[in-house]
Length: 301
Image: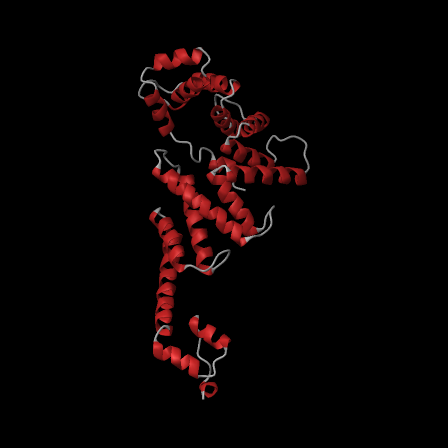
């Protein structure tokens, strides 16, 4: 599993603050609602103070107060945000893996996909989960990872695909790996089209999804070989700035062009007649289709 510190705020972006600010043109009204116990207002006010906005400077202490209030009131989004902060700690909030785990657990129980993802990672990496055997932790981690992936958590989908491709903690299964990489790729498209600002780490993970899926489709691992689909995914990764994808893309294009030439040649009626009239075995024909050498001349005569 990926290091959480490197993935912190993978998809959390200051754009959320502008959404919150737009939802309430009057900061005082937001404060009033938060003081009255409105958990959503408490969350929005906490985010305003955490990031700062056109209406207020960042005020970390007040941010922590309102985010904790929202969490205590049952707001799953606030639970997830605090769980992330508690994993790494800050000036305003000491690192506390046990509390981070508990908040992730509560958010997951409320059906929050990212909470499930955080809970799975806590079990995988033994982060505040208590005295559990490695086997039990892995069982619970896989359980919540699958739930998070099914709920649409992008990172969980990528990690589940990785696990099936590598055969770690779940059975090695190329078809399932392709399935979850494909879902993650579709999810990434939606994220890219949304108003959320993606972090560099998120972009790198999206690049990885497209590169891995492109290579699997090109090689026919977990799915029927599809050079066109492979090129599409590799092109997306390259468009996102991946230099490795650009290199692989050039190689795949050359192989695809050679394959198209072979297919065109084999579609020629004269070539087809030649193949039918000569004593080629099916193995010989398949070798020719793949661009291999022809059988020795004496075999053809």
